[in-house]
Amino acid sequence: MGFYKTRKWINKREKVLRRDEYMCRECRRYGKTSAATTVHHINQLRDHPELALAEWNLISLCGRCHDKMHDRTTDALTALGQAWVERMRPTLEIL
Image (cartoon, rainbow, N blue to C red; front, top):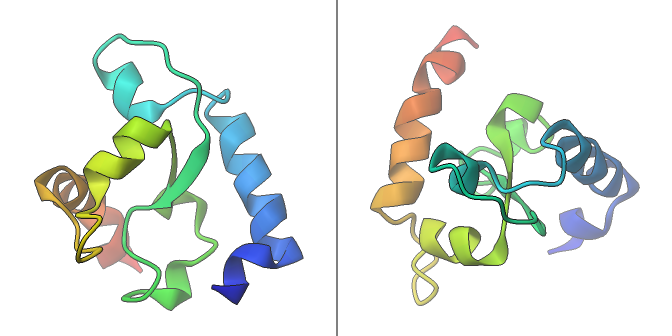
């Protein structure tokens, strides 16, 4: 997708990784330490393009945790991915 090659995304991705200290937020919830390699859209980009660069909608994840957020066959959110959406729903409703 062309969005992920834009300067705005590249800069935002770096800012989010720095914010999260380059650590996976899902692993940190369980006291683990894993390097983040991906910035994940909690509310999926295809469903909410208006949130593409909203920092509250972005979390740093390791590759393993990012794979747990999506069904890689259908790209639908898994139960874990949906749990993050629910966790962030109050923020979305404020907008």
